[in-house]
Length: 432
Ligand SMILES: C[S@@+](CC[C@H](N)C(=O)[O-])C[C@H]1O[C@@H](n2cnc3c(N)ncnc32)[C@H](O)[C@@H]1O
Image (cartoon, rainbow, N blue to C red; front, side, top):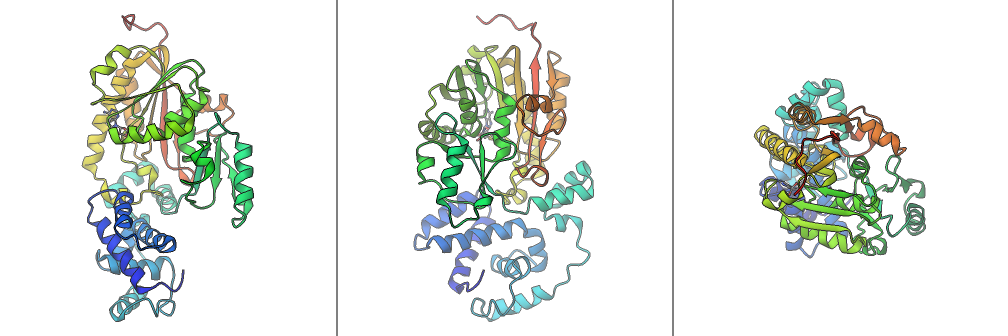
């Protein structure tokens, strides 16, 4: 990183100020900032995004170094202490005041920082993680979450093979080191690219041959393991990342229901669906998990996925702002929702069918605690070990009975999932 124009740093400062005002998720605020500043070119946008996200990843440390949350000072601290730029590198970038800041920041001692600052997390979150994992592992997890994620794609096997897609990317991206465009090691349909590419206009994307999807998210579809001809429900389908992956596994047979309370997300799913070539999907807006529309579907599904609304703290590599936006109160409220959605989903499952609970959270409050409480309250369900379900599909990941993915171990976002099976001789009344 060099020759940063002062004006560019001002743009980054304004974008960061907008995000720190906390009016919405960082990606949405940044998107609207770019729409309002159309004069910015591709490289300039890339700098603004990189620097702003860089600060969000390390904001606790940077606030300490900068003695507060002044966005411009945080950016200077990021350039000097995270990017390792010298005052000489920044000679033409910084004004007199900023140069003084840079000097102070450079001189500031960072020995003996608290573990929460090293983890770059708010105290409440650090305390939860260190209680769960112990200081050492919690710090490793926190640090892995400070890194940028690579870009994973899922090949839509309805339309293409992984080999063909891989070959096309390798032949096109001659500027990238070709050894770094690889099949994902765990998901049988994934491809990993070393850096984010804008593929929204790429022919493989517009023709529906690939979707952007983290490898961990792809694995959740395999954990559901929908089979051809089955009735499958995705109760929190959102924009359909996992729905579409399941549809491809079903080879376009059976019936796949996608429910969500967000009209916007389902609209997004509709657009992705058009590209996907799937015709077995039925999406439906619901008001909540108690929506009367779900009633007639009780006891009808072979598999029900609850990809529950959660804190999203497993996705900090992509959404570092979440660590500053979420609160213990939010987690408490989410627990209530997760419990309620899972209990309602259980009624949709056929005797002998399966219910899969998943989150992209790191917190046991939203993960094991919800799964354990579900089992205790639903004696007609038993736990099916996630490692066995994946082993049956030759997927080489074994984290025990629950699936627990972590970036430093699996190079995926953080995910949790549990598979429950409903007793075959259920007391469920026969569907009317
Ligand atoms: C983790 S996101 C789903 C992501 C999606 N499955 C994917 O793979 O892209 C959780 C979703 O739950 C939805 N949601 C929240 N409360 C809900 C409820 N009571 N019933 C159904 N969906 C709900 C949210 O709108 C959100 O889209």
